[in-house]
Image (cartoon, rainbow, N blue to C red):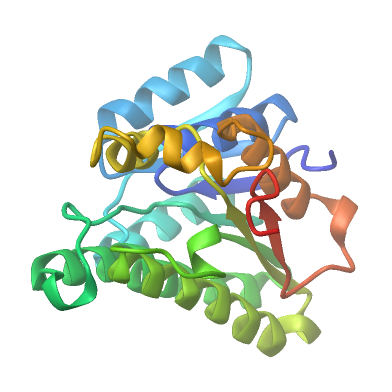
Amino acid sequence: MQVENKVVIVTGAGSGIGKATALHFATHKAIVVVSDINIKTAQDVVNDIIAQEGKAIAIQANVANIDEVEALINQTVAQYGRLDVLVNNAGIGPKNLLKTADATLEDWAAVISVNQTGVFYGMKLALKQMLKQGHGNIVNVASLAGLKASLNNISYTASKFAVVGMTKSAALEYASKNIRINAVCPGYTESALLDQLISARPDMDAMLKSVIPMKRYGKTIEIAEAIVWLASDSTTFMTGQTIVIDEGTSL
């Protein structure tokens, strides 16, 4: 895939899909800014990339804090002179899986601040830089939960539907500016979020697999492949799209 020497920020890149994405970009010779709220896990990913003779730096950032997102982008541009790709991957789930009437205000505020507002901050500030330099590419990580109902998960569902909508709106606004914006919608993928979901009930693992036609969970590298592809020069005629990678679950 054609991402060699592109300067790429991946948020939430210390683990899960973000980590797999950062490593996959590096494999294809991109320059990767590994960002995470946990600087230790981010640096561990950087060390892995450098050990494979890749190029990467770690920058700590909480995407729910606009000042930290601004610092992340400013430091990247100061280091490399540009920002070619932003992957808005950082995300969380609620602590409690409850029906809407019982959902806690704390869960709502936390999930929306990271999953929805964090993506808005990332796009808003990255777009300003991309407009200055005359090009750019943003890939937002949404979810199957942004396309269909997800029981006992109102905050996460709301945030991921928002990511899909924001992706389409922003893509339309900047299509004429040589800036592309797309999203991926993963299904149930091996990650800390999935572990949290499975631990909610003893029968959850079997129940989830019963609705997945392939009868298995996705692997993080399978999602990373799609993200890097969207960020590459192989997809220059694509914008405003949501790529569903869900083992057929949405069918």
